[in-house]
Amino acid sequence: MDAGFEKYVKDVTDKYNNPPNTEEIMSELNLCQTLGDVKTLVDKVFPEWFVTTMPRFSNDYQQFQNNWTLVCKKIGVTPTQVMIVEEVEQGPDYTLIQNFAECFTRAGFAVRKKMEFIPCSECSSALPSALVYKQLEEKNKNLPEWSQKCSKC
Image 1: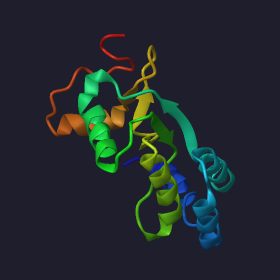
Image 2: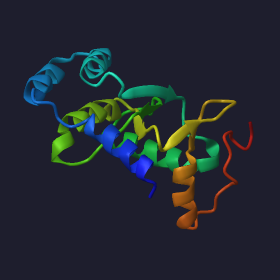
Image 3: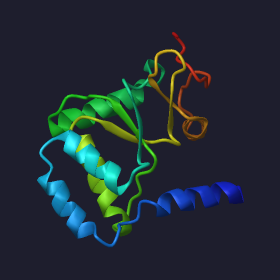
């Protein structure tokens, strides 16, 4: 792996470690009454975390849309949008960012990393990045040719 890419991943990941006042922020999060309140809090704590939203996953990759729909059905919410964020790390040092992501997921958002999905240049639906496409290809998925726009756009 390229040393510059490794440094980028480490720097991005380190930004989302639990801050020293995590318990205080979790208390604030528990008091949030609306999703707007949660967004305001996450913007205050991790100002660069939220990147954008996309209306849905591209029809070219129905497996992503189907999975999101299944998750939403399981938790009893309607799918809303694909929410692109800088990073969502796993592990005990990242519980705060995980809780923020969970709030949005429970509201129907598919929370995905910026390095995983790009918007279609025509309709803004979420398409896998070249990196994710390569991973899908390695799993021998029946895929359309990679492009920065949906096959029907």
